[in-house]
Amino acid sequence: MSARMPLRETLEVLRAERRSGDVVITSMGSAREWMAIGPLDPLDFVFVPSSMGEAVPLGLGMALAQPTRRVIACSGDGSLLMNLGSLVTIASEAPENLVVLIFANGVYEVTGAQPIPGRDVDFATMARASGIGSVFRFSDIAAWTVGARTALGERGPLCIVLDVAPVPDAVGPRSPGPTLARAAAFAAALQQR
Amino acid sequence: MTEPSAADMGRAIADLFAAMGITHVISVPDSTIGPWHAALDAHPSLRLVRVCREGEAWAVAGGLHLGGARPLVLIQCTGLFESGDSLRNIVHDWKLPIFSVIGYRSYLNQSTLPGDTCLVFTEPVLSAWQIDWKLVTDTADYGEIRTHYERCRAAGIAGGIVVAEGRA
Ligand SMILES: Cc1ncc(C[n+]2csc(CCOP(=O)(O)OP(=O)(O)O)c2C)c(N)n1
Image (cartoon, rainbow over all chains, first blue to last red; front, side):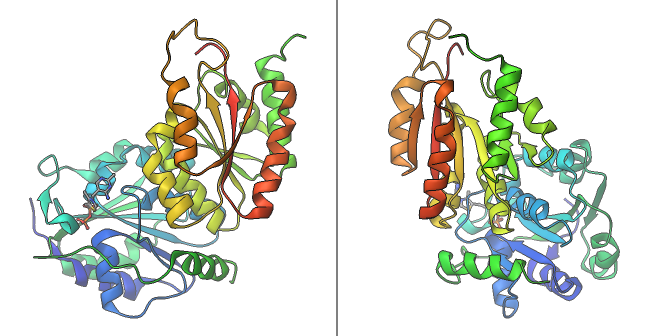
C-alpha cells in the first residue's frame, strides 16, 4: 500500500472545497470526523444511523432528484465492498452531479479496525471497470490539497479514491440527533436554492 | 377471462404509476415484473432506475424522497429478503415512507418450484418489517395499488402491494 493521508485533514480539504449548495453525505468514520471538524451545514446529511454500503445509493437518489446540485457521497472501503454493484448502477444512471468519495483505509475502522477482505484492493480500477469515466486517486495530502478542486470539478459521475490512514482506537460516529427532524430539515434545505 | 399480454400489462402498470404521481421506479426484475420494465422505461413521466441488488433500491428511493421526488420500489419477494437492513434503515431509522410493489413468487403456481419457501416467508417477513401491505391476486384488481398508495401517502407510512405471481 502506498502512502496514506490523515482522515481528518483529508476531510478538511473537502470542507474547504465544498461549494454552497453542495450536498455532503458522510457515514462511518467520515461522519465522525466531519462532525468533529466543525458545525454542520444544512446540506450535510450525516448518514448515522446507516445501512452498510448504502451511502452511495442514497447519494444517487439525491443526485437524480436534484440534478442541478452537486452531491458528494462519502463511503468507507468496507461499506463499498458490501455494495460494489452500486458503482455499476451509478455508471448506468450517469448522474453528472454525483461524486463518490471512497475512504480507503484498509480496515473496518469503526468496529475496531479489523482488516477488510483483500489486500490493496484497487478501487479506482474497479470504478473505471464499472463504467465510471472520471476516476481519481490521491494518497498524498499535499496532492489532494492542490488537486481537490480540479478533481471535484470534473463532470460526474465521478469517483475519487482517498487512501487514508486508519485512526487509532477510533469509535463509531454518534448520531447528531433524531432522524425524523434531521430528515425533515435536510429535505427542506434541499428545496431552497 | 384471458390475461393481458405482458406488454399490455407493462403499459397499464406504467400508466397507473404515472397517474399515481410516481416519478422514479427502482427495480430488479423477475419473470413477472421484468416484462413491465420496457414500458416503464419508455413512459415519458417515469424514470426506471435499474439497480444491481435490492438493498440499493431502498436507499436510492430514500435519496429520491428526500430530494422531493416520488419513488416506488418494484422488486420480487426474494429481493425483500435480500434487502432487509437497507429497508430497516430507510423506512424505520429514517422514517421515510417508501412505497413498494413486491412480486410474490410461486403464489399462483408452484409447478416450477414445488415447495417454494417464498410461500413460507414472504408474509411474515413483510409483517416483521412493519410494512402496511396488501395482497393482490388478480391483475383485474391492480387498481388497488393506487388506492393503497394514496392511503399510505396520506398517513405518511411505508406501504406495499404484494402481487401474486405464477410460474417462477
Ligand atoms: C450489514 C452489516 N454488517 C456488519 C455491520 C457492522 N459494521 C458496522 S460499521 C462496519 C465497518 C465499516 O467499515 P468502512 O465502511 O470501511 O468504514 P470505516 O469504519 O473504515 O470508516 C461494520 C462491519 C453492519 N453495520 N451492517
